[in-house]
Image (cartoon, rainbow, N blue to C red):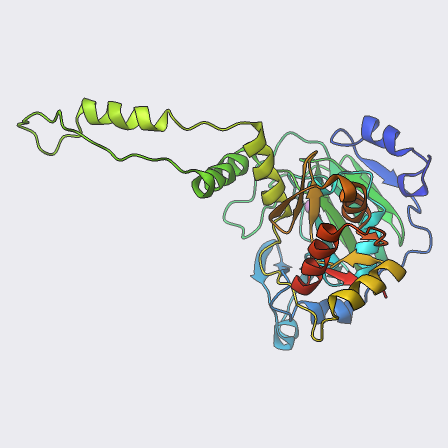
Length: 371
Ligand code: SIN
Ligand code: CO
């Protein structure tokens, strides 16, 4: 199906022609889009210690970066150009989570979050490139985007953020409310606010190989049980007590060579790691929880939805919610898959185990009843 969001392309055509390959400018991707929150609401979110925010300031090519949470006085002493960037807006604003649903044509495991920026006239974070795919959706105001596929990725030395030393724009467009620019990873770009401007960045996470290996090794550490202890009944007298002997190295190597892992462990690692809540995100249990039967009755009538902070993913056999694994039961597989895919579902099962599971998640604050 052709979609306005992608400038008349189908999802399939977008993935084939643009995703991870080349930029796409979409005029009027979301008609009448003016944004989901105003400058003051964005600034007040940056006061919240559970929210990740950054303030980027520049004065005659001198860059400064401050990390939140901020206080009103931080905004009083700003000089020069500035930009406020607030991450994870979708964890706090239902309308932002709804916006992300329009990007359901890309797997949730690749989605990072929605970041919103505010800059007064002339503000921006400087020319740079990101290692992930991003859709830059213009909210309130206008922003000039310059882009370049330049190979030269050298950075300004000693700057607190990654700024390209030499940026040679190849194309530029003035984006107005509702326009959107898709950029693949490593595409140099520079956004300059033209008047007050707010930009919505829908970012997609790309795990570095280093991160995959590091995190998998952590996973193995927690999931590996090996019996036995180092023994050396064959120890020989040595003149060099400080030496780690070749024999000791061989014995340790033979233990390490026992480390084995299979596809099941690798997929379990991925499910747990990718559904792990982000740093600083905590779940609130309901203040006055309903009884199980009240909950089930409401869930059947109105439906349930994942809490904004919940991340639910699945593999063929296993469901992952917020870093925890649950085996699928055949009776409830379709229902739970729908909850994961659409983040909401009507509870139409009489399967007792599934009902218990969902009530447990409700008590944990992982899901809520639909309003
Ligand atoms: C911004 O919104 O100012 C920066 C977004 C980006 O360049 O990735
Ligand atoms: Co960027």
